[in-house]
Structures are given as C-alpha cells and as structure tokens.
Image 1 (cartoon, rainbow, N blue to C red):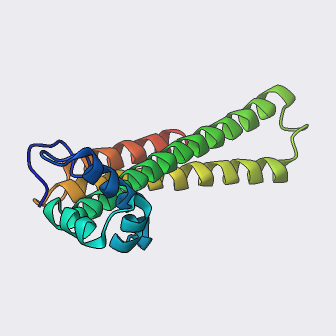
Image 2: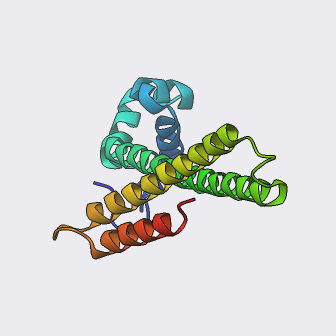
Length: 171
C-alpha cells in the first residue's frame, strides 16, 4: 500500500526518487493501456528496474486510487450539472407560467386563444412539476445514501414543502 504520510496515493511517496516518480507518472497517464514495458521503453530504463519501482511504490494500487478519484469527481460534476439543469428548467417553467398569466391579464380572455393558453400553462406546470419531483427524488436519494437508519425527516420536509408549493401555485 502507498505510504500513509502522503496526502494522496498518486502524489510522490516518501523515499520515492524523482526518476521513480516520473516513471510512475508516465504509468499513471497511460490509463487503461498501462504497461511496465512501455514505461521502461519511454524512460529508457530496464524492465526489471521499472518492475521493482512498481512493486516498491505500489503503482497498481496508486493508479486504482487515482482512477477511482477521477470517476468520483466526474460523477460529482455530472450531479452538479443535472442539478443546475433542473433549476434552469424549473425557472423556465415558472417564467412561462408568469408570461401566460400576464398575457391573460393584459390582453384579456377575449384576446388570448383559450386552447393555446391552456396548452402553454399545462406544459409549463408539467415541466415544473417533473423537475421539482426530480429535485426531491435526487435529494432523497442523496440523503438516504448517507444514512443507514430509515427514512429521512429532511426528505419528508422537502416532499411536504413541494406539495404545499404546488398546491399554492396551481393555476
């Protein structure tokens, strides 16, 4: 296993020479095609030396830790992007609803095509509802993945707040 004194396994380890770390870094950057032989060729070192460095400094485990870290960061970024998208969709839906209500108030019911108005409001409210449900579901899953002791009261509170909000904003 990597030396516990370093912050991260993919960083230079205590006692690891600059050359050994450079070789490790080449190995790390190879991704799925990692190869001791390829590192030896690139560094113009013997395969046995590279193999010894790999064994001494636990290259396989350090690379696994790096790969897991990269996957975790990508997942975190994707979750953030989905949350941002959902917020944008909710905002758009609310803006569409507000614009439809303004048009009805400003132009009057005689000037607004009832069929189009109903379709716009229905679409906007459904879009808002779907995205708010997605937010609640994601929040509930996130909370329950961090707790082992049954349902979350925060999730219940979010569900209740969403239910009350949707009842108050029904057109």
